[in-house]
Image: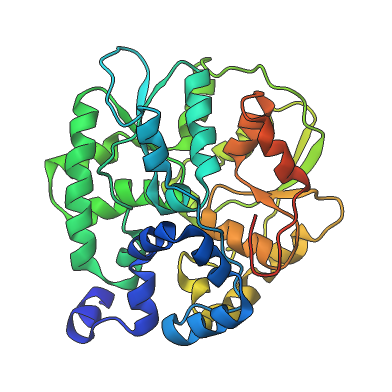
Length: 341
């Protein structure tokens, strides 16, 4: 129904911008320092709200100095391997590619720690989950067809597709089959996993390395709605509980209130905060040191009402493995008024 409405009436200004976050992120990346200044300057944020409809009070992430796919090309990860054994195609999606490059690097480091080859297809596009949610189905169908063709070729070469963003994994496994009746789409859906789910399955068959260093912290874990929709349980939470010294408290307060791009809009900003207030207030508890979740938009909401950082489970694993000691700085970092960590 939403797609039919958009076909007849088009997208309003705010939804037009939100459905093109991949395009906007690419342009923001070209002007990294200027973009970051503008995103976190009060006057520019007021102007951006008037132009795009994105709430001026919403904490937003910094744009990375270069995209992860560009960095992967320099590390020769954009070339498929001929080796046999474990190998994954990393479906990067928007957030890890343009904003949280450290998350992508943590995933690659963990895979390589387990002797698993990582391939980052240089022509992959974002998942188009925002377009689907906003009813921009025709553009989403074009992206789904292109992504499915290149991912299916990799699956036929023995790769498993793994995404660090639950929404991206859900898009490949549930949404693409609704958009296209295609053999490539079905093949990709059958061979796609969310990253923590992939690692937990390795643990279940005894292939996960358990050489963790202790981390003495208490984390507040939020289960994202898109991960619930994948019906895989709570793999990120269970992986964190394997780390010695780490206490993980599940925060059972329902949806974060972000709902993908919903919470970014000025019109929805207050409703989004009301919906997520239970989660935000729980994180303010002094017994919780940090937040943790697999979802990037939930992370934004979790840091909206507190200065405590929210860290992806994969980063905690990479730190516990001793692969990325620089992540330790995040444990004491504090988010600023308009900036998430």
